[in-house]
Image (cartoon, rainbow, N blue to C red):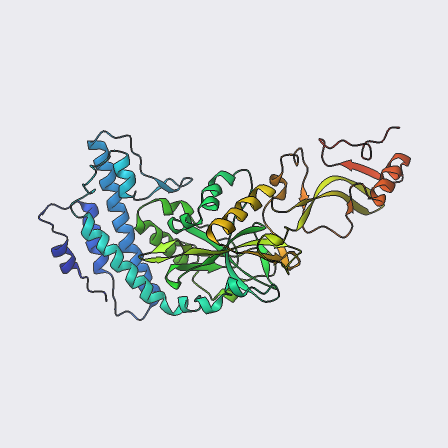
Length: 418
């Protein structure tokens, strides 16, 4: 529907047989009064629409905390940014689970009409962003069913295996449909510009209405906002698009404009937007075997640093080869291929310009200062090779200086008897 709200129409519709209004609720009416649907400035429109969502969020936080206090519940408002203690509106499900309100009651008699207002605000946002979003349509990206390792463009969500967040990723790896509940930090990759945070993950199919903002670098998306009420996702979308006070907004450049020579880019993608749902279309794995698909292609190798040798001004790394995606994760992808039909596509490892994930977290034996290398430097030699054995002999003679990189690694070659 076209935007028809005015201060007067909102006051009438939101009366709901209750004349008393809190100062927090009145701020919604004031924000509506400042929106000009005839404005020729899309920026001004979006700023005004965000102000409406901000007012609704502040009111809902006030109501949920007031209800929790009355119900003597231990509920605390969720945070979208813990460091800044920024509260967000909770979902009705979470409020009921926390016994803030009854199983069939709402946080307020005005909740339903306010939810309708949120939906109308989103419709306005969609209208304002329609031209920019058109550049992110399905014709922009390659159909995974027509994968060509030498020519592709994908919108992806890297699925890391770092110890700090692997548990958080497990849910979506086992059930990719769960991404519909998230605010996704995605990236654009192409055959000649492949900068990734992780060497494997999901290839997304995202409706234009779910694309929010994009940038050549990190945008600081508050992904935790997705755990709140639906309106919080759109507040976050506009916060990133417009920027905060004193910070330039990221906007929504076209897909090719977010690419950069080194380093991953970030695209804010909503998991869902009132009936439009982002889904996983395929799985990508960095591989040297790009002519193979599904479970035929093996992950590319990385090098676990065992030791290094300095000969003059040259540093030579000794590495053991290990797959850049663990067997455990590959088994999970195989299950998705078998059970859900998600194709597994090999992305050329040679196309990778940079990789953000600290690969040392992949294997438990890569500790005590050890680090993994990807891609392998040309000066690296394989553990156990003749070149490695020669270096060990030179270290004993004193013509090369040896540095131990993995204290846990012990073998006759690396620890020769004197």
